[in-house]
Length: 111
Image (cartoon, rainbow, N blue to C red):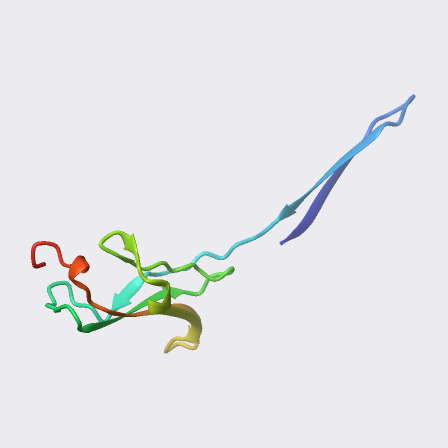
């Protein structure tokens, strides 16, 4: 990443010059993920129960943004946090954990 500049100079008789600079950011995208743990696909929950789920995505630069949704709506902001951690191979991974209390509104027709 850095600032890149190109300069062009004309020839005789005027020797005009022009230049242009831009900032370029190099990104390193995750090689794997996202992986979600802690919530089984057909797991049954009731209103008032606490659901804990964890999402991991491989190392990236800049770090990946992880967003939680429940039934396609944004999860309550205080219900989740994120951090950088080391996986079993010693590589950095982006981790986000959701801990939220199930509400009636989450359940459509009892599901």
